[in-house]
Image 1 (cartoon, rainbow, N blue to C red):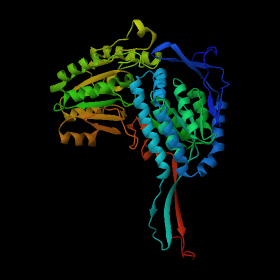
Image 2: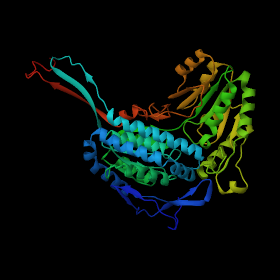
Image 3: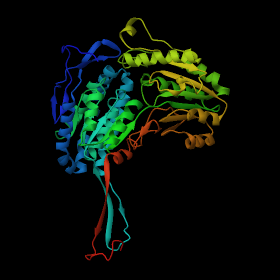
Image 4: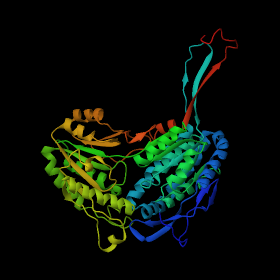
Length: 499
């Protein structure tokens, strides 16, 4: 943590409908990872009392927001959708400056977020229960969904617009009030997101932003008796702590965590399509996404050709400041992530994997001002290597060679994670066997591991996630309680508790 003088603008919390400066004694300097001379602002390390004040504001706002008709709540989200669409260019450039991905990638994230807001807003007119036949005469049985109360949304830095919105929007449209704690690395995009909801007309206290550390601010939120649910995206280590902390209070917890996503390339695959999808999946967003392609499992007869083509494609990637024209891949988000990337490059070498291309920090000229690492391909990686088992979250892809389909699926399933997966083949039998046998929450056929749509559930199996899926109709499940109602209109007392 770095304490600095307030020569750079401090970011503010948003509590009870007001932008307020934190009283925390420490701040973290927010810099552009592509050029650390570019200082954006100061992220406060807010106090536990400030976090509790944010929850109190959400709690006070809950009754009125709960009683606001769902279609009216949806109209406010539609206004947020409009505002984000109007401001997408400037928001994309801000995202690039703060997080480092290219402007094209940032715009892709914003467009995905716009779709999420549109879908969630429409839920205001779709929040439905069920009507079911009763076994009793003249009895009407039905269910309805009601909000939980105050919910906490704790989000990472790698998708600092999309992930907050796909948590916040369904929470709001279902009638909950929200305390939003973003990553310390992306406070400015977090403030921009909250500003859009504010200007869309959210009542005061319905959405609150608190900046600070997970240990202080995050724990104060989770431990507050008014908080009824926590939706978290981040590391397995932190997710496990949050899950345990929430379980101790008997509240709902949803965690989306790590990934080690495989692409399986069968001998009959279109190799050009597979190579392009692998390169985009491995090196897009500098590999800093939970759905990034981390492993390529290739049938031996085509492995040499595949690796040769993948290496050639990788060497054409232009690395630099994501705001510049013609750049394909930006920097690591900060010095810690860069150190992680470099450490795994050494691990790969020490384990005996074959370094095909990349494998170094980029230096000289503008590279010296940022956190740049070359996109890297390792070949002859075995499933037991750390390179094949551990999430790197950087632009490093490992090629695992296999003899046949069964060995490919076994290799794909050999990790603790189960988020996304892909197979490239022309054989329909292999397609449907893969869909049946892969241990992953998302399966792509003849396309890469990243990607998803707002109307479909997102999430993984095994150590990747706990709790209901995010996005699509599944989002409503997490943020609501089901109430079952029996209406007796016989006008007479029952003869027993059964009939």
